[in-house]
Structures are given as structure tokens and as C-alpha cells.
Length: 476
Image (cartoon, rainbow, N blue to C red; front, side):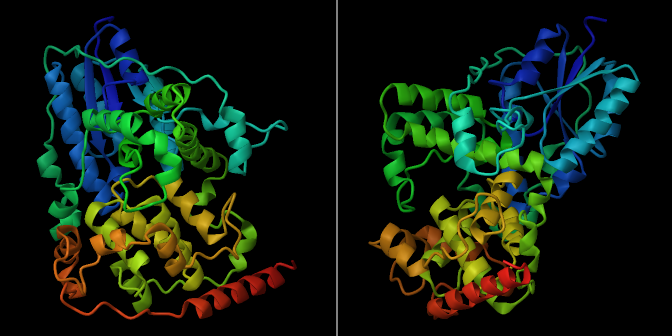
């Protein structure tokens, strides 16, 4: 049955260009039926990530329709949905892009086994990462635990050139029935903040490619020098697109390599940031406990605060710590779904070190608020700052929020943009925060800006003392 349809199961690969599974499905010669399945693993992602997923799926559906395709939406247990679709379409093959999170891998392995048992050709393909995590190893055959040697091991490797975009969809004679994206109401979890966050997104593969082109043309040369200044639009702004697969890392790598060969100074540093993402998935593959537990076992003895409902933790979430750089960053995330990378390190350090709060509390808040949420990068970033992770910053390196503001926002451009209190004419973004927050928080733009909720010197001293206690308990 050479003309039997191939089912293409879309997941974190919401694009038509550089898509190995899609190319293979078309090469099979028959019609292709694209489906996105809302299963339990989709339902468990955070509110902001769901909103961004909704936008991306809508954009993909439009792109597919423009070339004669259709994106089928189904909900339920993924294996059951695929089996039903196979029966309806008389399909003989199911293709998908490979996943790397343990729960997703377990689901996929079971589905692949079950489909093959019933005679279905089930295949998975790469495309989400530049390098398969199991294909990069140390000279002794182990896995890398420090970034710099990992970079050196992969930076000279050949990376496959991006595949061309699909321009014609091989449609079946009859399309299977589909649920509607609107009925799924993926935006509902955002409640009244949904429209505000949605307005700050630029979803879809076409928009992602345009952002990459603009970055390479106008920004990459100064990337290393300006990337730490949050008031500047100096980064690629592609973290959400990479997380959803609206653009492939191969496409970004090829553009970065071309920029490097053209002599653009910041290009190599951009390539290093792409490899930092690879490193996160390398670690996830070899030590999956990084998602939920201290990567370094001895950190189990650290006396983390776990009272997630404490008033000061709420103030951290609300951007009301009294430290302007931190508060601006937390509000930026609440309004836009993203946060500048320098700011991410700062707010994480403040929570884990000055406040001694368990990094998992911060990780969960980010997972709910970030539109560019990525499980591997989020976990590695939090543990890197907390000190419990691989390649971690030394615990005694505690970011001072005032010192960081003076260094990276000396003219207070970033903080003024995001903080409304005390300003005669706050920006719309600063005011948007108060329109997006829950009414139960009872926050007002005309209220006084809060006083600092802790003393920085005392917080630092307490954190270092707790660290010494942990070392003593571990016999170090």
C-alpha cells in the first residue's frame, strides 16, 4: 500500500522547514496527515506556555493550509488517539520528532512498541537538538559535567545543513475529523492576564525566521558586548521559538556560522549559547533527576526553605521585594512571558541565596509564567545559580541586586520601564502588570514602591553560614 497515508505527529516541531520527520513522511510517497495531540503531558505545562502553544499551533495550521495541508487536533491518551487515527485513515506509518524529557520518552517508547506490534511503521527523527545527547562523550566514555569541555568537544563537529521548507502538502482524499483549537481554550489558564501576555508574542515559524534574520543582520556583531544589558534589544529573542520548534537549532547554527565566517564578532558567542542549550539536554539525558532533585547529592543537606506560601516568597513573585532590578525582572516576566537572561540569574540568586528558598519553588513559578519555558534549560539554570547543579556558580558568588543594577542598568532605563510606582507617566508595560495580576493580590500602580524586604548584607551572611553548615554535615 504505497499510497497509504503517513501520520505525522507534531509536538515540539511546529514548523514546515528543516523538519526531518516531515521530509521523510513526504518521501514515503503517500498522503500525509499532520496531527497534534493534547494529552496529559500537554495539559500539565504552565499557563503562559499553554498560551504560547495555542498561538504557535494556530500559526502552523495557517501555514499548512496555505500549501494544501490541514492540522488535525485530537485530545486524549496519545497511543489511543494514534490508533484510532490509523484505523480511520488506513495509515501504515506514524512519524514524529524525538523527545528528550523522561516522561515524554517513556510515552513514546511505549507507543512505538505498541504500534510496531500491530504492524505499523513507527519511526522517530531528530531535529530538536544539534547533537543527540548520547552521541557526545568524554574521552573515557562518560558524559560531560562542565560546559567548557562540552563546547570544545562539539564546536568543530559537522552539523547538518537545514532541510528546505515544504511548499506542497500531499493531502489525503478525505481528511479525518478534527477538534477545534478554540474549544481547547489553552489560553484560559492565564485568566485576565492572557490578552496582555499574548500581545507581546510573535508566534509562528515565519516570525521566528524573520527574528533570526534581523539578529544576524543587525545585532550579532555586538551580541557579546551588549547581551547582558536588559534595556537593549540585543539578543536573538528566539528562546520561545526554539522551545516550540518553530525554528530549528540547525537553522540558527547555520546562520551563526555564516556570520562568524563573515567576521561578525559576536557570532561565536551566539553559537556558544546554542550549545549551552545542547548541554542542558545532554545533562538531562544522563542525569534526569536534574528536573526534580539536587543534581549534587550532597546538597540534600542544605537547609532550603520550602514554605512556598510565605509572604516574602509571594512578594518575590509579585515583583515587590523593594529591589528595583529584581522587581522589574519579575514584572517583565509576568507581562511578556519572558525575562532577560541576566535578570534571570539575578532573581534566582536572590531567591535561593539571600532568601535561602528551595530552587524548585522558583523553577515552578518560572514554568507557570514563561512563554519560552524549556524543562532542561529551566532546571539547569536554576540549579546552576543555586549551587546544587552541574557547572554551578560557586555558592559564595551571590549577586548583589543593587550592584547588578548599577553595572547593567546604570541609567535605570530597564527598571523605569517596568516599575510604575512613583512615576508621573509610567509606561504601558509597567501599567500592564497591574492589569494582568490576580485581583486577589490587590496591587495598585499608585501605591508607594515597597521598602526592601531584607537586608542584603544580612541575607548574604546567612546564606554563607547555611552553606558552611551543609559542608560540615557532609564532612567537608
